[in-house]
Length: 133
Image (cartoon, rainbow, N blue to C red; front, side, top):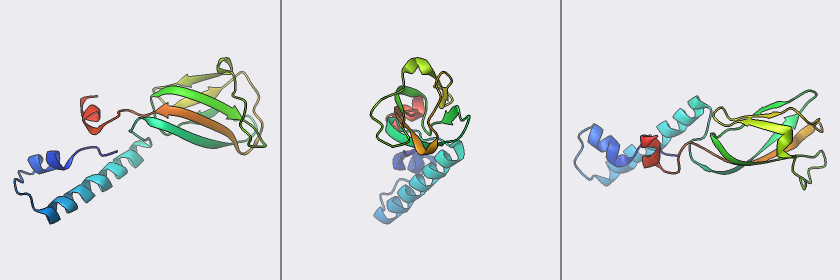
């Protein structure tokens, strides 16, 4: 997600011209800086549906999702990776503001990518909404 817009940067730098080459360079800069900021924050900011897979080792109970807050979630655990039956919501809790999923009332099947989490998470739908949040 873009953290700011071309127009915002041009206003901040008092650039009034519409040089296409400069606009392309500034836009590239906006995209690169936005990616660095998301990486530094260790979270995605755009609200969208996502799917994440986690390796499950003995006594793993806490999993961190890459976009939060979380507004909807379904959790699956299956060594065979069929992922047809969701874990009952009563068997886990979500710290939505931290992106933390805690599975505390069910044993998990261990294995590589044995936990699948489908969720909607992120901070804002648009760049302008991000600025006001």
